[in-house]
Image (cartoon, rainbow, N blue to C red; front, side):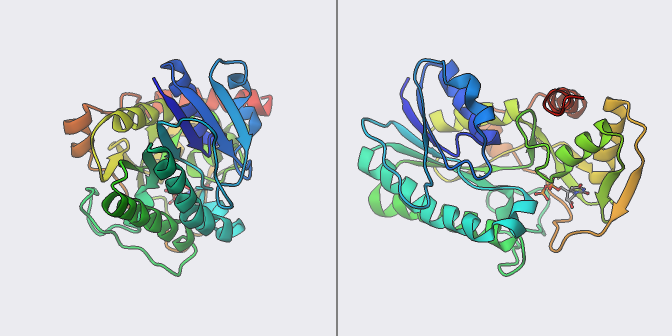
Length: 312
Ligand code: UDP
């Protein structure tokens, strides 16, 4: 049991993480500027012992009074629609926000846990992607603001480890979905489910042959905690290796929701990765972690959340 700071704690992943930390008896200090996070994601946590929320932009400064055992840095807009809407904030939170969060961990003698991303692999030429792959990122494209911010975040995290002896963990998060995603977040899973529930056409970009590997949020967060408690310094992939084409995902959403919506095809965004699938050998060998929730069950749980928030 410890006292854990979660930056971005009101976001999709951060809010699930705060809840699981409280479940196991940790105290949680949740920091968020609510730019993409939402109080509705954490309102059920306010009554729980050991939970504190501070509205704060970690790109500006971070300070938390008292002892801190770990700083888990989850603050960042992460959806492709955010890459065009708020690119500078993404670059700032990945660079200045990571620097400030590292500074807090160093001052407190705390462990630092960085939420990184499969986007560091860019449009990967190696498939599936092991942690040893250096990636194929376009630094000046529209996705570069997120990809390069996270690559910088990894670099400065390892520099603090080597130069200051800071105890660090880095998770590379692959596509994750589940309750508390924003319905208007613009991603494939949220778009398709909301479109299906509202009887609107499902918008598949390109011909839908590009692939992703979707991890249900409960599996993903269980992986974060296993990594936090481990001695694995350096990046670790946490994601579900079951790979689907985006057209298959759209069809799965139609099956699960029973929707009669049609599928329409729209232009593929610039630099959209053609394939993505984690190699999870490191996580399975060293953490004994593997995902358990199958795609249809995860879509069902996510659809019931969206039905509730959209009043459908
Ligand atoms: N995508 C799609 N329709 C949508 C939203 C996304 O076909 O309404 C595609 C997108 O172009 C990409 C894939 O689905 O090829 C996964 O996109 P998502 O935004 O979920 O995640 P990311 O691109 O970050 O992996």
